[in-house]
Length: 247
Image (cartoon, rainbow, N blue to C red; front, side, top):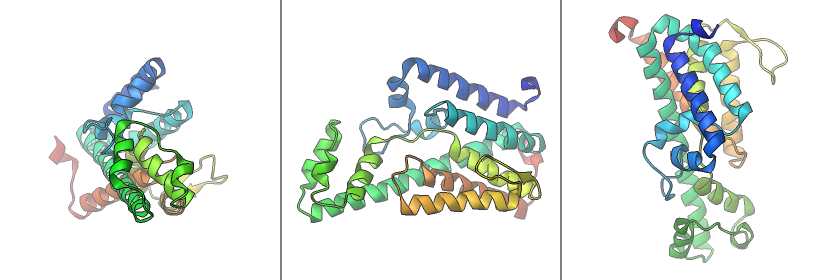
């Protein structure tokens, strides 16, 4: 079965597995180098916009993402070809990273502004963050609501990992191409058409991303991948962007 996978999907799958094995061996060193950190965090590097797509936080995380890649990406690559699929996949992944980073930047600076308005020194706050020392949430909660303090810490200290953003783009493309296909995953106990299933999970991410930013899930990365996937599919369909252009 593995040999029958299309070339790009197989390559992405192997790369993710190798990175996961390396992470099991090297742990924090891998997360420090290849996760997507907040742009003002000393650990941030521009290569992380790509490298974070091959990092995962645990076995269940990589299992779900790689299952979705194989199940939904394989039929797309067989229709599009390798080059077009790779372009789409990494475009969706970058869109996910950029939206996640932008939203994190907004929430981080909103929290900083609230703390400064409450009397905390901006320079002292930035110095503590840049030094790598952990902020005391209880201390910050004297000045702002606890959820604002938690958002400040999570934005700065918790990196994004995983192929989920790119996979969400793949899911959107699958819904475009196979809108009537019936899907059923663990959290849906009955089959549902792809054209309804994908918008539902994206709306779920939007809801949880707005109402609770501290879930430990990069909801806006999912939305970013889905949004770029939607824009590309809409543009390609509207402009008859066929596979010949990728030969």
